Picture 1 (cartoon, rainbow, N blue to C red):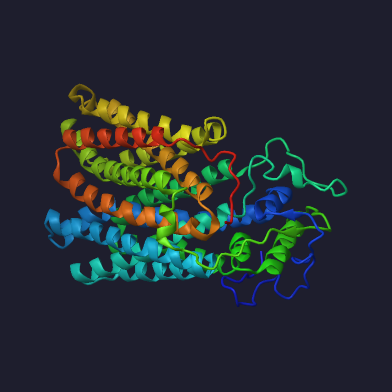
Picture 2: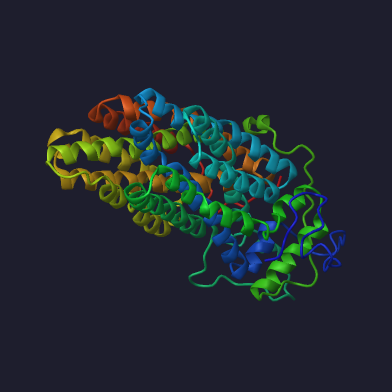
Length: 490
């Protein structure tokens, strides 16, 4: 796709050396937003290549998180750690994410998406390998906290990808010039909602691959090889990120209008599409970008608070259920006098995220983002409450099936929530909004790490059901949906 610039002054992009095909100062030309131009270009090779690059980052991040479920028990045995000491490793990851998410997101809104994604991905790979050679608990805590800090660049990659994908409906139908050939909606086109959900297959694939890798390496090698091999996708992603372009939304708010228009024309050519010859981008320069206080302006405050409550509940439930599942499956194996089949059981329940994607694809444009969250949180809560019943909890097949179903629904809720975030906020605080949510969610992640290891299985499942219910109520209280919302720059 060509090597693009990630700040206002780089000149490495394929589009930088081109003369402007369309003048941003031509006041007689029809005025379009970036969303309108991307809608006319449609989804094509460019978006699909970017889909693979950013998806690889998601897969790598999922592996780095999922490996905790297997790493902590291994280190407890190898280094003779107490439960509190092993939990400290998991907590260090969440502390790193708490600090990194907002920091990297704010920097991406100020200085561009690409550079932050590249630095974050590369540093995650480096510290992932260093974790595999950590000599003791202290170094392991330090390296895993650094992994947590830099892996939050994944939310910037998610934002970057979303800013290149077209909406379901024409965002500016009144701006269509009659003399130009414009794209008409095509049956089966991959719209933003569907493609962002479909990208979740990389997260699911990463989590599943982590389970399979643990199955092999922890049986035939050791935990050090498990950590080193888990970082391999990050090295691949780091190289691929170098060939990404900067977001045209960011270029517009940073007053690089000619660069944005040339980039959009480049994407159209890459996709084999034709844009009108006479148009200009709407001028929306924003001097103050990436300010946390802007998230709580009057027009955003109410939704912001509810979204952050929902996100914290999501993190608490998703990771809590993943960690608690290890103890629960061990209990089932002992109850049925079976050899430890943790890897098989974890593979089955991790695969639950695949049907979640299929459900999301079917529902996201029918129920909307808010509707998907409502259904998913309620079904997750019901699944957890059913597992509280001892007759069901102690029946192996039913228990594994209910964990499968619960993980399916909480993953779907996470997907719907992420799409809502990137569509609700304008470009100058879009990454900041999602990054700050991830930071706040880390408090829930730290808490759920201790709860999953400390509470009884029954009490833990009941608590996760209650948290799912809280998220459902907060989601219902959100009044607007973003299904047909323009991805605005100002």
